[in-house]
Amino acid sequence: RMLETTRQPDFGPEGHAQAPPASAAAGRATLESLSVPGSVNSVLEPGDQVRRLGLVSLADRFDSALVLNPVEATKGSMQRKFLTADSWATKTFRRLNKRDDRGHVYYQMLLGGPRERLHFEPRKSTAVIVTCGGLCPGLNSVIRELVMTLAEYGVPRIFGCKGGYMGMSAPDKWMRLDPAIVREIHMSGGTILVSDRGNPPCSEVAQTLKDRDVQHFFVIGGDGSHRGAMEIFKCTDQIGHNCSVVGVPKTIDNDVPLLDQTFGFDTACTEALKAVDSAYVEATCNANCIGLVKLMGRHCGFIAMHATLSSRHVDVCLLPEMDIDAEKVLDHVADLMRRKKHAVIVVAEGC
Image (cartoon, rainbow, N blue to C red; front, side):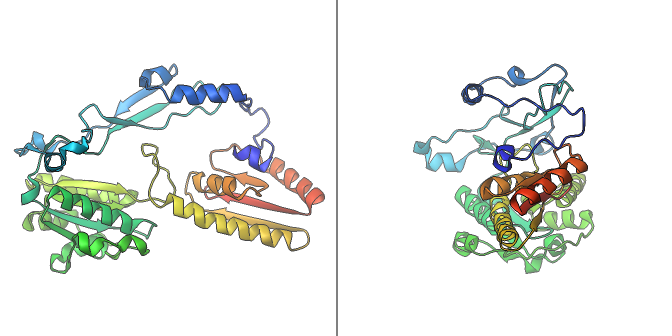
């Protein structure tokens, strides 16, 4: 779709094989096949592997309450579907082109969601939420939903740790949270918990969780924050504290293939579109002008691609996932300037 929108040629190096365009009938057949439930094995190619990522079960080490889900007990008529030990999320399947016969490794993880039996007794539990690293659109929305859900389950003590991991060293400054406090925070940007990038010793954080009898620790952050969360969990295990450490991926780049979409991605695309539109105005309102926009994304081009599709007036979009010959790009841009006297180029971070 992006190539059809920009009408840019193939920038791949000589000898690079590009997949032929699919017909409309083939497209419809693909959509129909994706709408029919099927086995993962039906889409695997020779050489592909599926590997399941193990999840530590607290029940293997600590006594489990095995209480019935209280939300289901009070709202049984809603008939929510419980997830089981066989509920898995699979990494996005990919095939670069029809000649891509390399074996790919696809990972699976257990889906998060309601279970029929709970390890902890909600009425006797304490939860702490922390936001780490840089700011990201949607942080307050995530905090709000966590608090609302915990309250629905009947958790009586919910705290917000202010100042990232560093705030875990000052539990007296934790912020008490309840549905009334967080009801409208999603309408404000940033995070009410004040993010930070500091990292106290993981053993200290684990000891604080034990001293405050915290059973649920939610870490909203990026890859570094999640590495820290894993180390904190290992420390809680070493000191014998029965605590679930839950990581909520925070990235506007949408670069977690096991998720449908990461929070903040929509907002990032909306803001990126504004930059692309401004570049178009500059390019068309000045003589012989090129509007060049570089967009975030680290090692993937989702933001650049979606902004390009939304704007409809990008002439060249370059993504990290593409094989690019710089000479071909320059030749195409030169041709655009001869014909149109302006051009809009979007380049994703990581190209």
